[in-house]
Image 1 (cartoon, rainbow over the protein chains, first blue to last red):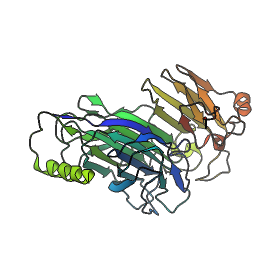
Image 2 (image 1 turned 120 degrees about the vertical axis):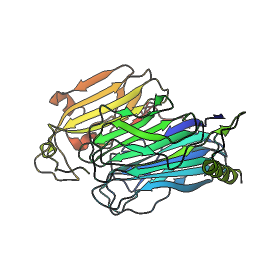
Image 3 (image 1 turned 135 degrees about the horizontal axis):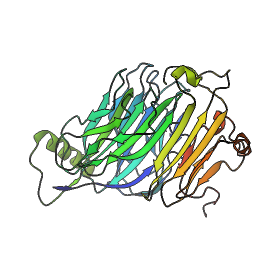
Length: 252
Length: 122
């Protein structure tokens, strides 16, 4: 057993998020960051051509960013999705996160969000997948087994902009993923943000939705590890090495 | 960027639609804004425009939210969405009075959870 991390605050741009094409977005401010916290930044853009490499910036907190997952098919028939994590190196208040548009095409609608986690054990495995130009429900399995009692996050961008008025998130550890965002414009794209605070027992986790079932989707996400509890999880060499490596890095 | 043109009929739809729904920070529910619009017959992607046929706001929680509409043609540039409300406006005159006649007027929407009319101290 472990103790799941704490989801402290979710922030996003005040307006236009996933519904406009500015050169950059800046989120609302985190109330307070503490050294050792983790920030997860998720982004998506309606079209994957003309992609450019971007990295978030924070207005304070001495944040060190790492790209964790991305889906950049490089074609104009699919969207793109991105996931970064930021290790907070210094406590700070009223910190905003900014990201430049991940494309040189100034017409593509896109968006970004940032989530603050505390009492975490570092970053675990990742989630990254797309369904090409097919029409299916998004189903994104973790790249490796998740540790017990982690949290997970995902962003899904639907090129086809299928109507998600009726939508069903996949079940993880006995409950549906919680939704942080649903944006859809029938002319441009749709975007979904989801998370689960406790993935339960160790093992492969699958994020996504079962409805709508005809999306042309890309997705990127990450596992946020919990902290070790009284009874350790059964040994799983790959995941344990990953977790320990990240925990050492976070301690430095 | 789905197939088709600015004409919703090109995608087999009766109308174009722009929707955003997010949870309230207090976890009591979610807030939604949903705009339906047509095509003006001349605009082309990615700059589609057309007349708004309806604007719906819904708040399933117990705290107030404000939908920011930065391109709204009349102040204030937001709509207050009170707890437990589900309101749909379809009358052209009302939409016009709100400054929400065309699709470009409702683009760039977002939500805030503190009254935008109140200037923070300091």
